Length: 113
Length: 327
Image (cartoon, rainbow over all chains, first blue to last red; front, side, top):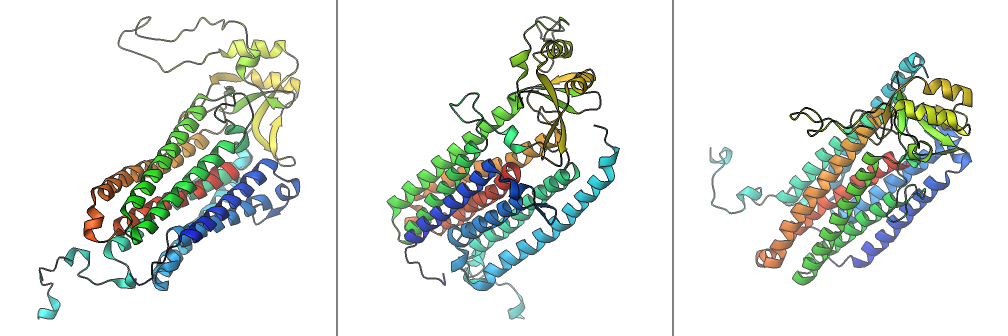
């Protein structure tokens, strides 16, 4: 292995603390649901959802970098993994969500409530 | 010529890439990463499909806070999300014990590796058990609802809060309908569990209590809450009811759109299956650690590789948690 294996115990506990705090913030916001975040939209969804998504990506970053040890791998291995995933997922999600919005615009007027 | 032919060198590392290590990663680790990237794309496909469907029914999608409200030991208490937050925390902690096992493996501390692996397995089992409990609540339902002729779900509200059928229906069911079992019907046939109440019984009980209102699936864009009909509209709407729906299955559910439950079962089930496989693999590796396999091999890299898989399961849960319970 190219990287040195000094003990990472301290870093692990710090990351656990970060992940716990992020999850707690998410759950607290999910329960309170502040009006100014819920009733202000940005790019197709409200601000609270954007906060959730950003916090989730932050958590994913800590899990992948610290726990899955991507930060210790060779840079191009890390890039091969992360860039591939991020590009394909963004591409897929963008197209599919636009399509979902279109389906709603087309079909919702036909639904009788 | 020799340069172009794969010669069996009798080198034991042939299956491990012949000692060649692209990016400084061993063959096994590289393959684990290949698998993780492809599995991540599989999950993305599912979650993207969920997103598409949700956008398609954006004006009537069930609100997670009103669906997942249980906490063990707290009966009838409205506790949205606390339990799933706890589950998330348990899975994160299991990731931590896993990474501690990997860390101890680098230092060749067999005992520590074994104990941390053991803890990881226990936390994993707790997580899967919690998910089973979550499914149980979801399948049984907590309120009950009726379905109209045009396949919409009607829920019942009193003083602005949803109430269960059992809270206001007290009379007998009137239609004399009983569960078809082998004992009372055709011996070679059984029927699916019938609802506890009949439609006529609910309609009558609803008319008898003027404080009851009907809530429909449609969301009011101004309040972002489900629309509650007026008393007259409620009675008119309830007259179109055809079926009583209690709990959830793949065909219908009391929370709203059937496909909501379908996605819930499919995505959390697929994730739960990953957790289950992870536990099984962890148990195998745990025994290998205890038996000293990796001690003799001189490397605990196998623990690192299953660790990658285990963290990946945690990573996926972070996204499932966000998109099913928060967003």
